Structure formats: C-alpha cells, structure tokens
Length: 298
Image (cartoon, rainbow, N blue to C red):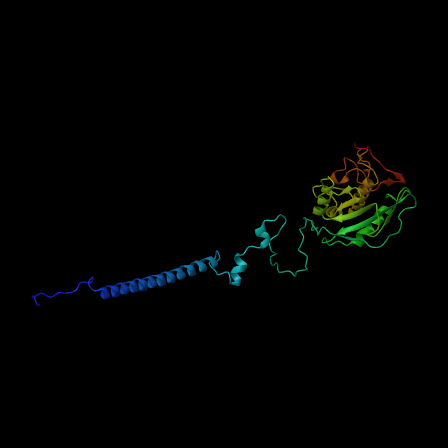
C-alpha cells in the first residue's frame, strides 16, 4: 500500500551491492600498491645507477675504464704492498732498456758507483818472482766503471814483479789465476761506494776515500787509483804502486808503520794516503834489495 514515502534499501540491505563494493575497493588498493612499487623501484634504480657511477670514478673524476685514468691514478702493486725492498714500477727514461744508467761521478770525472758486479781477468799468468812459495791471486774490476779487467791485471802483475816490489827480492812469488781457480786472495778495483761497502762488511770504514784489505781481499778504491791523493808529492804511477803494495803487504802479514824520520823515504806500510808524517813519498817495500821499514804502530 502506498503511504506517500519512498523506501530505499540501504547498502547493508543489499548484500550483492556490499560484496561488489568490497571487491572494487580491494582492486583499487592493489592498483595503488602496484603504482607505488613501480615508482619506488624506478627511484631505487636511479639511486643505484648514480652510486655505481660515483664509485667507478677515480680521484680525478675520470672513469677507471679510461686507460689514461688507470695509468694516472692506480698505484703500483709493489708501492701499495709496502714490502721492504720493493720498488715502484719503473718509469720511462728515454733510454733503451739495456742501456746502463749513468753513474755518479766525483769532481775529477771518475765514476763513484758501479754495478757491484765484477769482471775477472781470464787465463793464468806467469809466475812472478824467483823464490818463495807461489801465492795465487785473481784480478777483478767492477763493471759499470768504464774500466777493463785485462789492463788493470797487467798493471798489478807489473807492480808486484818490479825489482822494488814484493817479488823483487826473492822472498815472495805470485801468480795470477782465473776466476774459478783456487787463489789466496783477489785484487778488486772497485768504485768508491762499492769499495766502501765491501770494506765496511769486514769492519773497516774508509769513508769511500781509501783502499783496504780484508782476509783474501785486496780492495783498491777506483777514485784513488785514477786520481791519487792531494799533495802526495810523486807521480800517479807511484801512488798506484804504493796503494797496491800497501794492501798486499797487509795480506802478507805486515802491519802499519810510522815515518822513520823527517825527510826520509816513507815505508810502504805507512798510511801514505792520509799523510806522510814528514817523510817523502816512497811506493815500494824494498830499497836496494833490502826490506825498507819504519817503526811499527801498535
């Protein structure tokens, strides 16, 4: 019966309409979630890409896949490791790889350092001297010093065989032998720095200036061999004879000696490289066929 009022069913009153509303609502929520997920994924991709580019840049802002950037910024493995004795990667020098680096020289133009390796005189020399046990020796010259072993070996033999030398009086004989042969001692011609290291290894400190002798080693300083010492008062050939005879004298068992008197000849076992103590330079152990000596220094 009509009463004059319209009667509308509420949302609860229509179960089909309520189920459809909930379904639409769930669909809207899922769609919103998908949009949010897509937006967040896109933003995350942008951030990761920016971070990756930043990490790939070196300190100068160049990408590390740029060869120029790699060479400029990447430290060498040896330098980064901090291992004692390791060296950084070699730098270009403009020289051929096998060309030796120039060695430092002293004011007289003499190399003060070499390679630390030695070239030996080959073969066997003649016996020097007339009497006495034969003392065999080797001769070696440091490489990288512009010196040749054979000429130096010839000078060594000539000095030892001089009538005023150690083999001249019939007491000692000598013979040069090859590197691999058994020998009592070796005569080394070494640069100032190498001779300093060799002498220091045996407890003798030369300040890279004088020569020295260690058991089985007669070590001649190249700078002294080529230039002598200031105010020696005799030709370079005499100084060379003194330097060799003095150190070989130690090898034979002689100690240092003092000047026997002002104006007299210096005994060969006087340390003439550091001063003559009032004596005159004299390079030889014998004079007039007799061993010439001065007061022993304790």
